[in-house]
Image (cartoon, rainbow, N blue to C red; front, side):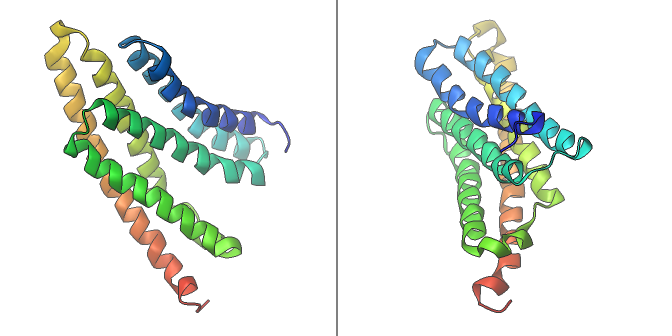
Length: 194
Protein backbone atom coordinates (compact mmCIF):
# COMPACT_ATOMS: atom_id res chain seq x y z
CA UNK A 1 0.00 0.00 0.00
CA UNK A 2 1.22 3.49 -0.87
CA UNK A 3 0.73 6.10 1.85
CA UNK A 4 -1.15 8.74 -0.09
CA UNK A 5 -3.21 11.53 1.49
CA UNK A 6 -6.52 9.92 0.40
CA UNK A 7 -5.54 6.53 1.86
CA UNK A 8 -4.37 8.20 5.07
CA UNK A 9 -7.71 10.00 5.42
CA UNK A 10 -9.55 6.70 4.95
CA UNK A 11 -7.40 4.99 7.59
CA UNK A 12 -7.97 7.88 10.00
CA UNK A 13 -11.73 7.52 9.48
CA UNK A 14 -11.48 3.80 10.16
CA UNK A 15 -9.52 4.45 13.37
CA UNK A 16 -11.97 7.15 14.47
CA UNK A 17 -14.81 4.61 14.60
CA UNK A 18 -13.68 2.77 17.74
CA UNK A 19 -12.72 6.18 19.13
CA UNK A 20 -16.45 6.92 19.42
CA UNK A 21 -16.95 3.95 21.74
CA UNK A 22 -13.82 4.80 23.71
CA UNK A 23 -15.16 8.30 24.38
CA UNK A 24 -18.28 6.90 26.03
CA UNK A 25 -16.32 4.26 27.94
CA UNK A 26 -13.73 6.57 29.49
CA UNK A 27 -15.22 10.06 29.59
CA UNK A 28 -18.23 11.54 31.35
CA UNK A 29 -21.19 12.95 29.55
CA UNK A 30 -21.86 15.55 28.14
CA UNK A 31 -18.16 15.77 27.21
CA UNK A 32 -18.37 12.37 25.51
CA UNK A 33 -21.43 13.46 23.51
CA UNK A 34 -19.80 16.64 22.21
CA UNK A 35 -16.44 14.98 21.57
CA UNK A 36 -18.22 12.19 19.68
CA UNK A 37 -20.04 14.79 17.59
CA UNK A 38 -16.78 16.55 16.69
CA UNK A 39 -14.99 13.25 15.97
CA UNK A 40 -17.89 11.93 13.91
CA UNK A 41 -18.22 15.12 11.83
CA UNK A 42 -14.47 15.24 11.27
CA UNK A 43 -14.41 11.62 10.16
CA UNK A 44 -17.47 12.10 7.95
CA UNK A 45 -15.84 15.04 6.18
CA UNK A 46 -12.88 12.81 5.29
CA UNK A 47 -15.33 10.54 3.45
CA UNK A 48 -15.83 13.28 0.88
CA UNK A 49 -12.24 14.43 0.68
CA UNK A 50 -10.52 11.05 0.41
CA UNK A 51 -12.45 10.16 -2.76
CA UNK A 52 -12.28 13.66 -4.19
CA UNK A 53 -8.53 13.95 -3.65
CA UNK A 54 -7.87 10.44 -4.94
CA UNK A 55 -9.61 11.31 -8.22
CA UNK A 56 -8.18 14.84 -8.47
CA UNK A 57 -4.60 13.74 -7.75
CA UNK A 58 -4.94 10.47 -9.69
CA UNK A 59 -4.14 8.50 -6.54
CA UNK A 60 -7.00 6.00 -6.73
CA UNK A 61 -5.93 2.61 -5.43
CA UNK A 62 -7.39 -0.84 -4.85
CA UNK A 63 -6.57 -0.43 -1.16
CA UNK A 64 -8.57 2.81 -0.93
CA UNK A 65 -11.42 1.39 -2.98
CA UNK A 66 -11.61 -1.60 -0.62
CA UNK A 67 -11.17 0.30 2.65
CA UNK A 68 -13.40 3.33 2.00
CA UNK A 69 -16.79 1.57 2.28
CA UNK A 70 -15.55 -0.46 5.25
CA UNK A 71 -14.57 2.73 7.09
CA UNK A 72 -18.01 4.23 6.35
CA UNK A 73 -19.86 1.16 7.58
CA UNK A 74 -17.77 0.82 10.76
CA UNK A 75 -18.34 4.49 11.62
CA UNK A 76 -22.09 4.20 11.09
CA UNK A 77 -22.48 0.87 12.91
CA UNK A 78 -20.55 1.90 16.03
CA UNK A 79 -22.32 5.28 16.17
CA UNK A 80 -25.73 3.63 15.85
CA UNK A 81 -24.92 1.16 18.63
CA UNK A 82 -24.02 4.06 20.90
CA UNK A 83 -27.11 6.10 20.00
CA UNK A 84 -29.56 3.21 20.40
CA UNK A 85 -27.93 2.23 23.69
CA UNK A 86 -28.19 5.72 25.13
CA UNK A 87 -31.73 6.17 23.77
CA UNK A 88 -32.90 3.51 26.20
CA UNK A 89 -33.42 1.05 23.33
CA UNK A 90 -36.29 3.20 22.05
CA UNK A 91 -38.17 1.29 19.30
CA UNK A 92 -38.29 4.45 17.16
CA UNK A 93 -34.48 4.29 17.01
CA UNK A 94 -34.19 0.51 16.86
CA UNK A 95 -36.29 -0.09 13.72
CA UNK A 96 -34.37 2.17 11.28
CA UNK A 97 -31.11 1.13 12.93
CA UNK A 98 -31.96 -2.53 12.35
CA UNK A 99 -32.76 -1.85 8.69
CA UNK A 100 -29.44 -0.02 8.27
CA UNK A 101 -27.38 -2.72 10.00
CA UNK A 102 -29.14 -5.54 8.15
CA UNK A 103 -28.59 -3.94 4.76
CA UNK A 104 -24.94 -3.14 5.40
CA UNK A 105 -24.15 -6.73 6.43
CA UNK A 106 -26.33 -8.20 3.64
CA UNK A 107 -24.78 -6.15 0.83
CA UNK A 108 -21.27 -6.80 2.17
CA UNK A 109 -22.08 -10.52 2.12
CA UNK A 110 -23.38 -10.25 -1.45
CA UNK A 111 -20.20 -8.53 -2.56
CA UNK A 112 -18.05 -11.15 -0.83
CA UNK A 113 -20.05 -13.99 -2.41
CA UNK A 114 -19.85 -12.46 -5.87
CA UNK A 115 -16.08 -12.02 -5.61
CA UNK A 116 -14.81 -10.99 -9.04
CA UNK A 117 -18.35 -10.15 -10.14
CA UNK A 118 -18.81 -7.75 -7.19
CA UNK A 119 -18.01 -4.90 -9.58
CA UNK A 120 -21.52 -5.39 -10.90
CA UNK A 121 -22.66 -3.93 -7.54
CA UNK A 122 -20.84 -0.65 -8.00
CA UNK A 123 -21.77 2.20 -5.69
CA UNK A 124 -24.76 4.13 -7.01
CA UNK A 125 -25.70 7.78 -6.53
CA UNK A 126 -28.58 6.66 -4.31
CA UNK A 127 -26.10 4.73 -2.15
CA UNK A 128 -24.02 7.89 -1.79
CA UNK A 129 -27.13 9.79 -0.71
CA UNK A 130 -27.86 6.96 1.72
CA UNK A 131 -24.43 7.30 3.32
CA UNK A 132 -24.81 11.08 3.52
CA UNK A 133 -28.26 10.74 5.14
CA UNK A 134 -26.89 8.27 7.67
CA UNK A 135 -23.99 10.52 8.62
CA UNK A 136 -26.10 13.68 8.90
CA UNK A 137 -28.72 11.84 11.00
CA UNK A 138 -26.07 10.49 13.35
CA UNK A 139 -24.40 13.89 13.75
CA UNK A 140 -27.75 15.54 14.56
CA UNK A 141 -28.56 12.77 17.08
CA UNK A 142 -25.18 13.21 18.81
CA UNK A 143 -25.94 16.95 19.03
CA UNK A 144 -29.33 16.18 20.58
CA UNK A 145 -27.68 13.87 23.12
CA UNK A 146 -25.25 16.63 24.08
CA UNK A 147 -27.95 19.28 24.40
CA UNK A 148 -30.08 16.99 26.59
CA UNK A 149 -27.65 17.53 29.50
CA UNK A 150 -28.64 21.18 29.82
CA UNK A 151 -32.09 21.61 31.43
CA UNK A 152 -32.46 25.12 30.04
CA UNK A 153 -32.07 23.70 26.53
CA UNK A 154 -34.44 20.76 26.96
CA UNK A 155 -36.88 21.95 24.28
CA UNK A 156 -34.05 22.56 21.84
CA UNK A 157 -32.62 19.12 22.66
CA UNK A 158 -36.02 17.54 22.04
CA UNK A 159 -36.39 19.35 18.70
CA UNK A 160 -32.90 18.42 17.53
CA UNK A 161 -33.49 14.78 18.52
CA UNK A 162 -36.80 14.68 16.62
CA UNK A 163 -35.09 16.09 13.52
CA UNK A 164 -32.30 13.52 13.94
CA UNK A 165 -34.85 10.74 14.31
CA UNK A 166 -36.69 11.82 11.14
CA UNK A 167 -33.37 11.91 9.30
CA UNK A 168 -32.56 8.44 10.66
CA UNK A 169 -35.86 7.14 9.27
CA UNK A 170 -35.06 8.78 5.92
CA UNK A 171 -31.64 7.11 6.01
CA UNK A 172 -33.33 3.80 6.84
CA UNK A 173 -35.68 4.11 3.86
CA UNK A 174 -32.81 5.02 1.49
CA UNK A 175 -30.79 2.15 2.94
CA UNK A 176 -33.63 -0.30 2.30
CA UNK A 177 -34.04 0.98 -1.26
CA UNK A 178 -30.34 0.54 -2.04
CA UNK A 179 -30.37 -2.94 -0.49
CA UNK A 180 -33.26 -3.99 -2.72
CA UNK A 181 -31.50 -2.46 -5.74
CA UNK A 182 -28.24 -4.32 -5.05
CA UNK A 183 -30.10 -7.59 -4.41
CA UNK A 184 -32.00 -7.30 -7.71
CA UNK A 185 -28.70 -6.67 -9.54
CA UNK A 186 -27.12 -9.69 -7.84
CA UNK A 187 -30.01 -12.10 -8.56
CA UNK A 188 -28.75 -13.27 -11.97
CA UNK A 189 -25.40 -14.18 -10.38
CA UNK A 190 -27.08 -15.89 -7.45
CA UNK A 191 -29.13 -18.00 -9.88
CA UNK A 192 -25.97 -18.92 -11.73
CA UNK A 193 -27.09 -17.17 -14.94
CA UNK A 194 -24.36 -14.66 -15.72
